[in-house]
Image (cartoon, rainbow over the protein chains, first blue to last red):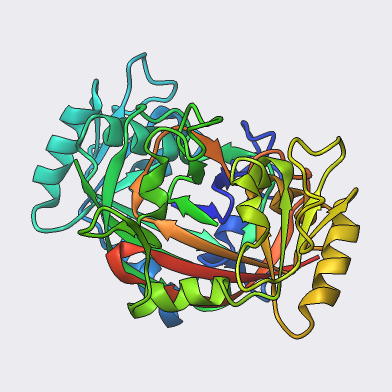
Length: 191
Length: 191
């Protein structure tokens, strides 16, 4: 997750057509920038390129409806044809039957169990704040990777909001100073 | 400021007699631990000791009533007899006339201006979240030093809450990995 130093992962007024909220694109500049051609381009060089590549080398993806649908289901393939597990309690708003990589599951523990199996030795990318919170509250989120952006948004959508009211210890496993003032902070959750 | 990874600087139910809130002492273990004798002891060794020493080598202190009074005004001397500027809009709840180092001021800009003058070449310690937010909103906070603790508190008092609704860019100036998983993050504010 890309997060401002004051804890926001999206700006205010996030919604359909404005997924990152007002000013929220600032949080993703480190990974996705506009090239001279005008096209959006993924970072491939330096420390930031290396960290982004790790994210894209995961062996499975878990996401909730709120991330999956606004992204158009990533056309059925998030990256490299890895399996995608989508948490749906209601009927999907888009037709997922056409996408063989996409599996619908009803609860986060099942989603994580199946995704970990599917990923084998690889990691699972937990995509979206809601699903990350659910996984944390259910004790099935193993690690946190935060890309801390050197900006105070002041308002917007917080990553850590509405967690279970109990203290959770973490083990710091890696701190990497990326370009453009971004600090990549990695922790292992100690339930 | 010592802050949990999820952005809290005190646990829930903070108040008189419970200044750090429930579980909030966890955020200060890196700097203040209980010695074998049972006494609370300031850390003097390692990276954490060095960072704490920087904090205690500041040339002036600025604080608000909410920090100053629960601390008993630090007996009139926070450290090394440096000047203390206290922001008071109402009458003080304790008698400050007996403390020559303590000056009462009415607004945060005056407090910071006088403290910077008093500190000379040294830094000013801005003590407390409320005063830090006020100073930031008024454009007189130059730098942020966050001691990020490897714990999720889940609830409590946030450092970044109720900031002016505008985006503020920061320049990352130093990241230091301290002992016990504490990461000291230093930023310069770019108004």
